[in-house]
Amino acid sequence: MTLSRRAEDLDGKVAERITKFGERCRAAGLADTAQRRVIFRCLAESIDHPTADTLFLRVRKRLPKVSLATVYRNLKFFSEAGLIDEVATGRSLSRYDGNRDPHHHLICKACASVADYFEAKLDGLALVSAVCSVSGFVGDFEVHDARLSVSGICADCRSHSGRAVEAAYKND
Amino acid sequence: MTLSRRAEDLDGKVAERITKFGERCRAAGLADTAQRRVIFRCLAESIDHPTADTLFLRVRKRLPKVSLATVYRNLKFFSEAGLIDEVATGRSLSRYDGNRDPHHHLICKACASVADYFEAKLDGLALVSAVCSVSGFVGDFEVHDARLSVSGICADCRSHSGRAVEAAYKND
DNA sequence: GTAGTTGCAAAGATTTTGCCACCAA
DNA sequence: TTGGTGGCAAAATCTTTGCAACTAC
Image 1 (cartoon, rainbow over the protein chains, first blue to last red):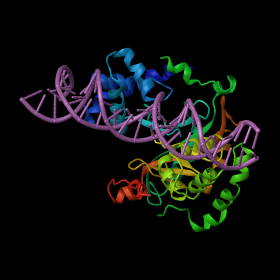
Image 2 (image 1 turned 30 degrees about the horizontal axis):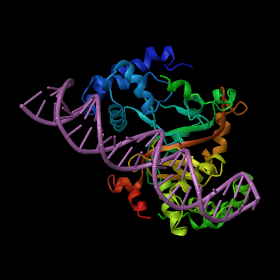
Image 3 (image 1 turned 90 degrees about the vertical axis):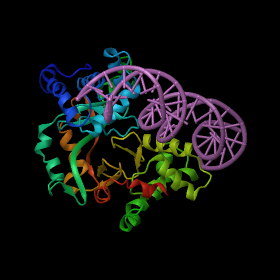
């Protein structure tokens, strides 16, 4: 596994997201700054749903003077503007996802890593449409999105008996 | 809405969980102390998936001398022992759920409140078996559980245009 | 020019830990 | 007894904020 998305993705949707970031930013009332472009690009190119701190380390490689506060601030702005998602992991550390296309998450109970899980059959199972079947509401709750959170143990933790995969990423 | 579960639940599964807590605790190698019983009981009787701090305030009503550290420590122990769940919310504040029966969550983007969502058609077992049609694995990932995280805007936030429901609970 | 943005440092919030007295087994 | 547990306070970690300098529009 690498830190970057698969090549076929990079040439497609990810590249498009990065290209359109500037206009999406302005549409949200946010100035199009160098820091924001790099923060978004680093997140969009990551497949590991990084924490703010992990992303900061990656951003700093391209923008050595960037501050952690700027990363935190903009992750929050992006999230509020719907440009990125905060991942629901059940851990207190916030993780972010630059891919807002419908997909699910595999969350490791041992190392808290998060992997994407695309499964057309589940969309076919009508999970999301079942949830939103009544005009986008469940009772009084206005449904925006429904995702699967699949929890268990990732391959790395099973083979290394609990050693945190995260460790490898921390040395960014 | 109240802070306690519906009466028909209280007389049933919730009461049973509380009754069996002692033996479940010892089975997990944890001593059966007064603090642990109250912490678990307060969580099991809550329907709002409280944060550690909110739960601490409720526990303190029954055990005035309890410390916040004890609540944090035991929530972690209970979670590791599989007695409770940490709720995946996409916010940095950890929330806990004393109900480990299969159910889903409605997570408000505005106030971060979490409500339960029971739907027989989408019950956890059906999801798990759908997800891991091949012997409990998705690729190399060992699946333990699969839940829906439904995000959107809760009734309170829609009617009060964003006022945090949480505020009501904070005054425990 | 002006409003919005950044970096820095400091503060705030959340969670964990060390240590000794105390309690359950 | 005796190892596990709890309370307290301090530390560690994570996130937000105030402010002066800088930048996009």
